[in-house]
Image (cartoon, rainbow, N blue to C red; front, top):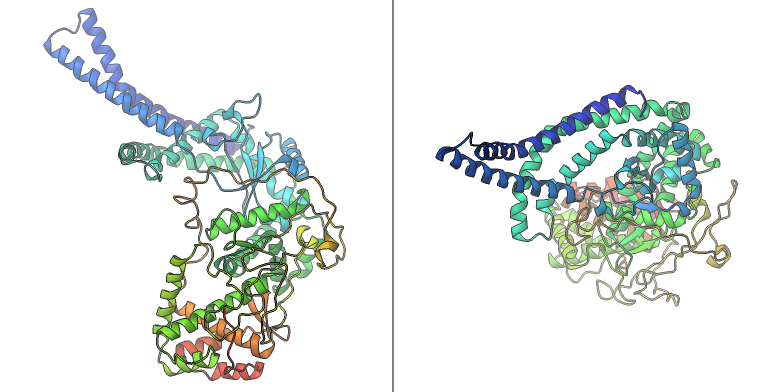
Length: 638
């Protein structure tokens, strides 16, 4: 493992962890040792008499009970399934260049090669041991399962934003960690700690019958005592392993790594904004963006441009992107995008009518416009239930008149919160608004928006997005009042299904924009090897039911005041689209946005808050007059 200072410290703490295990075994064996001594003394005649006979029986029974209990605890620890990070596994045939780069890194660092590569929708990279038999990974021929190197888990945003040299520099310290992981003492200590950690959760695992759950409680208590005894040493062992890996990686791309760390921080900021501002509204509408990793390139480019850093960062886009190391970046992006939706929002593992993928070209129509009209329809339903001018049409003036005459909007905010909760329990958790049949709407006499009840085929994937360049996002065309056009290509029940296919990697330089699907469709090629998510995530990761709740919620539940502001803003946007020629659009950092004359109007939020909090409609009326919105005209709802 080398003579790094951190390696020696890691070995010392690993031995301390193993000593905790040895002490536990000694305590469990102590009654049996006393019983053996008493039985041997009785057999030789040295310990005879009624008192010694009674002691032999008591100690022997106690030894049997302790041994049975120790065997039960050991069996639970050995069979407990360690936690496994949900990832998208990348077979070597699907990314031979990426595997070659990792193998070259391992050779230069003189450490074992990771046994596999997986992607996670997060801005981080690490090594993960997946040698436990419960994980279902096939053993490497000729190698004992416990000696199999860990799997390299890479954050998928890194592949699309970073260049190949930057990714190699960032991964060097991670790959160097396979050296300490191969040390027998460290590997044994890690297996022991992982087993303890998994055994603690056995009693809370769904599906256990009451008898087994009751028996698991004392086992969990014993395991917690062992965990407390080795927790400090385990933490120090991992710090030593990280220090040793970092020290060994200094000989590989050290100068470039310092520069690449700036890209790590930028990627984290852009990824967070993309998930919370762009992806989350789509997930709430029952749509999941199928090119999140390609979108992060556009989000980061926009972020660097607004921070006046575009000259330095966007010039990198001419270099070879790390996603070019994948044979099918589009398929990998789609798989990680669906996994991100499951992790951060919850939802089914596969697409369906109420959980359909959406491309960035479709986002303004399929997400932004639908979100606004769904929230506007909900706002008017709540006003109807509150008895506010029941016979009035669905106009912006109705909302403004109500909020300007009430001192606060607390009653309306509470009613909207209750309505959102009721709808969430009445429909599948993945979708907030399912498409309605053509000609139907929330309020009689109002037409549905163009395309609101229809699904359109997905356009061909953008070559720029697959090559790590900013995706091109067209804005929705301004919608005018009138009947919705009929689409013969898809019915209202058809989900959006992108057409994944083999993508050629474009050369650096100007690329043509997305055209008709038949113009961009390449010649058919053999299907790539399957890209799969580990199959043991039913109870270990997702809990009972599989998809009920997200593992990592992005935001806390919205308050009633926030929901009311969102719904009033949606009503204003619907009125602007229907009466002033505005259009829904997508801002890579702020999410859904209203475009008037092709430009954003970020000053709308403050005027809406003045109406809600101060019952002052004048700032909003002034804005409506400037844009040309007619609040007295009915809007179309979903």
